[in-house]
Image (cartoon, rainbow, N blue to C red; front, side, top):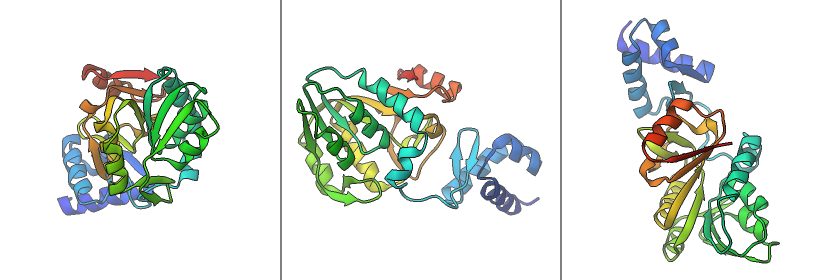
Length: 252
């Protein structure tokens, strides 16, 4: 089988199944796993699939940004447990930042009414906190992204520049050992880069589905993350590698 034929076969298999492992492709195509990994790298560069931990996933039906109501119900139980754990590290009078993820919204709902300053670019988070009298809420402003109900764009980035927070709580679309954390949307990625820049400590809220995934836009390297809070289904080998890099891992 010629390389070009193998590429087409790999893409067809990934699109047909949704995802497939390197070992399976190696057996089907009768080449080494190392050859398959190189093939997947080339195909990802061409935008024909997306690498995942140990294999590849289809991009055929991938949307630039998943609507909020869909994110609310995807891995909802895991996200709620992650949010509950994250709330435990918040102390009275902290200045914190919550992004526009569904996990951050769960955090907002679990936050006790204690003296806090919360900076956010999320309409949902700001609304959730509006009934808690001791919490001061600051919104970034900017261009409204209707799918995520969040503020993005140059104004959002500039408004974040004037603040500094103790702790930032962010989610993402992908966590990859070599490629760091990533997002599917460039405007969201730029806002999250700014959020990381203005924070003393960064907590990444990532359920197990995010591990091994590289989304379209790079946000930052793993060295910018202090703590990852995830669920117990997250791959143990990746978590071990993260801990070796000095990142605290909390599983719930």
